Amino acid sequence: MADVGPDIIFDDIGSYPLPARMSRGNLPEGESYLELVKDAMAQKIEAGVQRPTYPQFRDMIRMFMDPIEDPERSESPYVLLPEHARIPELSALETLGRMMEAEGRRLSIRVCVTGPVELYISRFGATDYVDILEKIAGSVGRFIEAAKKSRHFDVCVVSIDEPSLGISPSVIFGDEEIMDALETAARPCRGIDCEIHLHSPLMAELTCAVPGINVIGVESAANPDYLKLIDRRVLEENDAFIRAGIARTDIDGMVARLNDRLDTNLWRDPERLEREVFAAESAGVLEERLAVAFRLFEDRVRYAGPDCGLGSWPSQKMAKRCLANCSTAIASFRSRRGI
Image (tube, rainbow, N blue to C red; front, side):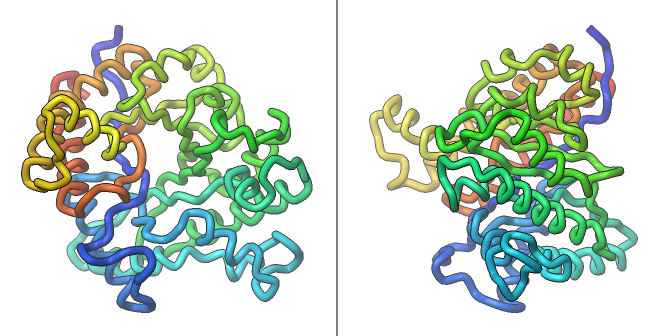
């Protein structure tokens, strides 16, 4: 095994808890909402995330499908006008980017977009209208194209989020149709990394063959055997890489297991809940997970971070601590390996 590898980059998936006593149902609007986004992004940066993703406080389907389905913002059904392919959260990052520029720093981010298959099945379920899928894919691509034009930060990686691929029975498209749609969506990613975020490894090898996609996200913290289902040779043949999940984010499942083991209800004791969760998910545990991924894939490991988003976590404080643990684990792993 090689002694050293590439500089493994720490990114996160996106979703993040809202401040206390706030929910998606009572989100503020306008500048107040953008201030929430900016503050959460600053927390991610403070925790050490190198390619932070704008916090997804809004619904991952509606934030893209609402403009795509709006006849006032589309040139034809499901074909979004380029001037309306904006992710509002990114305007908050322009403000944060200007602040960082004044300090002599440049903000580098990861932009996530909900993938065309995910958006399609949210509206059409187990049907196979390929023409509509392709139109949605083109609209997703326009969101990516618009994001890359930002002035005060650099989009260094884009993630196309397709959690239903390999899981949902509603996905009845053939492999070629899925690949074509993903290629269309990923086309604007020229010159930057393009991840696909999956919840199942069953489509990993197929999606790494999609032109434009070069990083496969695997939820390997909660499901370590997922890594064994991916053939490193297939990655090499397609010049593709792995994003390794090293921190579990399924907080409900983690706490349920801790409750059984400790014969208690940790939800009633937030301080003890935090202690027990991070005793189980220490930086040392996270580092060992990264080491396992590296033993399997070596220089094909390009990104690492939490499995999925942290939106369901009890507080921003706990979510930030999870990210900080990832940062510690990745830095320690780099140091030990001489990376």
